[in-house]
Length: 137
Image (tube, rainbow, N blue to C red; front, side, top):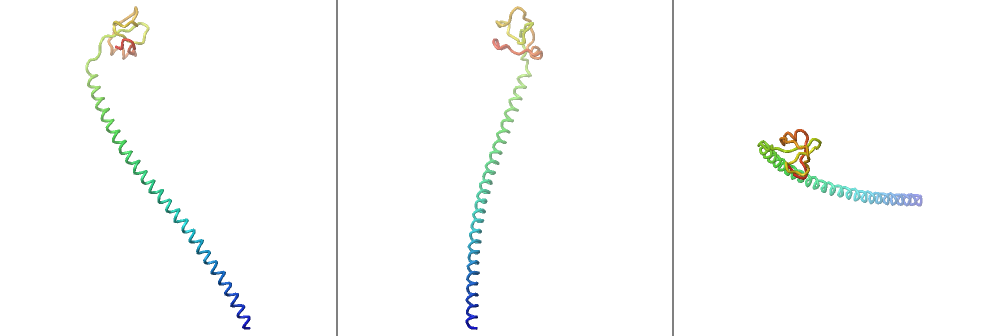
């Protein structure tokens, strides 16, 4: 009977050893898995930090572009106002057109041939005539 108890105790000890080994193995596997997960989290945290920095830079660039756009719009408004003021003065003068041409000319232009007709510049423009490239009226 003593031998039987000793054998049972030996078997129980061996079983406990295997169980302990399994628990240590599982503990090591869990530790390794935890480390991998922490590294993954650390990598994602770095990615988030980089993306937030990129968002900050893009927002700053957007603000700069909006300010630049506003300045350009103000310049355009100023130029448009100046142009309207200068165009409201009488800039019309006499130009010459031909029977068949689509351009208007100065009186001395060599492109004018036999059929030249005097016309007001504003009228010529409104009728679709464009300036001659040689005399540039």
